[in-house]
Length: 148
Image (cartoon, rainbow, N blue to C red; front, top):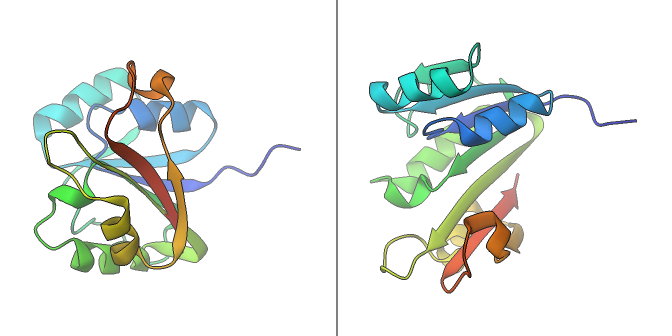
């Protein structure tokens, strides 16, 4: 039996690539991005998706709304990532899951896995080194963290 659909917040959803994949998998996804132009592109990519313009650091949803809070390449760019993480955790339903997908890129930008784990708290680190995920060999640090 497949797992039940999850309510997922996709913070910093960009043009909706992950929103589309998760929606197609049957999940209820709410995408959020700061740029109105990017949200319009996401609406074109994922018609009918629940997409909102707003700041990922302060999502507009009430507490205990989501099973999963996903943020891809967002945490490293926030001026106060620890404060954002506190807010994100309020969005969890009981047993909710935080999934930041981050990296420390060859340009020097980003967040090391060690720093992300320190911010996110105890969690499981998964390195994302498969070239199929990125379209090329990975020579820098790319990962996700699963935390509660």
